[in-house]
Image (cartoon, rainbow, N blue to C red; front, side, top):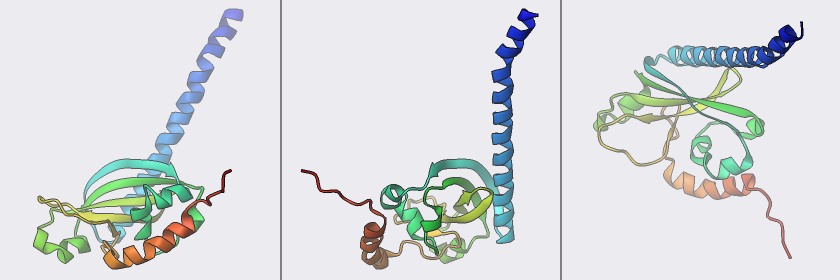
Length: 171
């Protein structure tokens, strides 16, 4: 009887871990399904679903450092997502407005990065796929607001002031 109990206790963590992995896979599949539906509703043709690009908890620090350019082009304030987990999924699509807008660069499609909170698409960015490298910032999902140039320079100072953590005087 003790051997059976020892065996059950030994295998129990694996069963729990398997359940956690299955839950993770189900959540990821639901997110990919939601993201794919979102892109199809926009009329984009799917070339490739490249999967989870990155996942993070949005913080003020990220909004003034690593993620600033990506959140700056969103047509909404990121405030309600601070402290929430964000998953970014990467897709390659065609039939996207950037292909026409930047046709002089002969794009071979568009990379789309969808920002998700839970199973909901909340925003994202796009960038043309070209043979020659293009320089500049990302575009919003629909190809607008990209590389806002002078506007970026003017507004980035107020953005940094709003999202930078307070500086405490040290003695």
